[in-house]
Length: 283
Image (cartoon, rainbow, N blue to C red; front, side):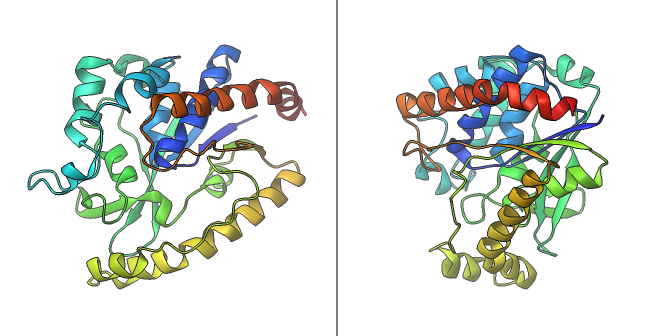
């Protein structure tokens, strides 16, 4: 059996997935292949390094911290990002709440972050370096259009992976995973609508027509992906864990109380589904 685990993004809503993966660590459940999108990979690496509770500490202490995110950083000349990248991807993991690079390097499975190529508008799946203390690939996967600057890796520029492939379960199938767990951050009945900011974002990236095309198709592509995902679930190809309710947590939520409630929802859903999940894995 080759187990794949896929984590959707969703910025602050991804705390739901943190609860799920902390439960997985308790149960000794680890994948052979892992793909994360945006916050899905940013939080996912703490799961893969086996640091149970680390994401919860980030939720409790640092997501509510004014140093973590805010529009003031978007308008700073040297930042131009809604998230304070030096704080989130350097100070927190390298000083305040140490990330276990050795444990992550020892993880025997394959780890990929989903990014969107600015020039082609297509998804790419980049291996996550095991000892990059600046987390450049993770930053690229999290770089929402207009709220972040494109991130250069090699000779290419990238933005948030969710633009082109929000839930990369098909990538896990391509990788030969015959058992797959998909962790979502939206309710099962969620239907994506076109972003209200699309016109403004299209103007900002007017020199990248293929990226704009992907942005325009994003809602339809996401909804079609969900339709296919749930059909695959019925066919026993994947096991889906999703919140019953996102409890009012938005993309940029910073209330520790609200975030912890959604984290607990994730932990609860994982515990409730564990018996069925074990049967799925053993079938």
